[in-house]
Amino acid sequence: MTTSSIVSKVWNYCNILRDDGVSYGDYLEQLTYLLFLKMAYEYSKPPHNRQTIIEKKYDWESLRSINGGTALEAHYIEILNELGKKKGMLGEIFFKTQNRISDPAKLYKLVQLIDEENWVSLETDVKGDIYEGLLEKNAEDTKSGAGQYFTPRALIKAMVECIQPEPLKTIADPACGTGGFFLSAYQFISKPSASGGLDKSEKEFLKFKTFKGWEIVPSAARLCLMNLYLHGIGDIDNIPTIFREDSLLRKPKENFDYVLTNPPFGKKSSFTITNAAGTQKKDTLTYERQDFWVTTSNKQLNFVQHVVSMLKPDGKAAVVVPDNVLFEGGAGETVRKNLLQKTDLHTILRLPTGLFYAQGVKANVIFFDNKPASKNAWTKEVWIYDFRTNQHFTLKTQQLKYEHLQDFIKCYNPKNRFKRKESDSGGECFKKFTYEEITARDKTNLDIFWLKDESLGDMDNLPDPDLLAQEIVENVEAGLESFREIVNNLNGK
Image (tube, rainbow, N blue to C red):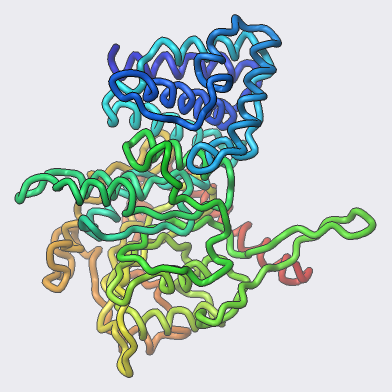
């Protein structure tokens, strides 16, 4: 059976469940549990003959042998509860699981659908492509809010292409979502090079020791684990390297060669308190960490500081940040000054709107290399690529593709970024600014732009109405977000 036919089967059934009120997210979670059970069962049979920690009374065979009805539903719930108590990847995937498919007949049909295919025999790419497609579809389900865990894969690929991760080096993501950065880095490191493929020790390291991630939302962490597993990273019997916790709470116990991340949008870190009268209010959360340059409740600034703390002395980072990180005063200015002083903040990519599922987000990618302590500032010049002005994208009709970022990658010059040229190929969109020029700006403002939006001045060549409408929505949403911030500050929230 071809990949496309398997995908269409999986999707068609997803649509049936949607009609029954099961969201893409819930469907994807149930699919994750059942797929994992089926593959564990397949691995326990010849020629693999692997030992699994799943008892026979809770394995795939025990589930598929029940011909539907309430008995199937009851047994499925029992399996979820029992496997959630196990250790390792198994326990992490089934942690606090619940059955979301209320119709036993639909559950029976889903079990049959998965049982028809031998998943272990499928190529890793095939299994991974099916699951990645499901994750993307889940992100499009805007009501669920799942989009905040999904970074456009074209952007991730470009970031990885610029960083150029090498074998036998470690990669971390403190807000890993469904694992997009790990998969892209895995594919980059795995691809054959001029010197040939990876040797046995490099493959082993890549599979078990390269990646480490943190994800505070249990459902996203579960999807990440399954995504990695389907792409050949980690194994059933190994302790997973995805931690279900708030990565900002403490200084990391180890440092990494690379950090690639897109932290969740939303400026404030907060938690909800319910008082004796039952009234809820959000209390601002600040992270008191000795290794941070400044204490702030701004989540984005905390993540930037945290990424620096995660890097080895010669580590490299690429981080997606909203515009406010580049221009906000107070704590923002302190973070920018330290970043310029203590790391080599060499590149900023200004991103267009319409890339993220979170509305009203204007974002950038900052690239910096960590450095040892020094009296002099490590950043000598910052190269800024304006990919926002005169660029128009939407999530559906005009999606960002990897090809759109080719010029940026060429200008970045990953093979030797010290031999860059201004506006190497894409007009005037690539410029450098010296450390002195930046520090002379008010509040060390890094939100620098110089291009004019030509399309809006040329009445004969305006963008399509849907693109214009989307830009208006993005700008209104961004404005609303700023007003909400002001109101929250006035109310002391």
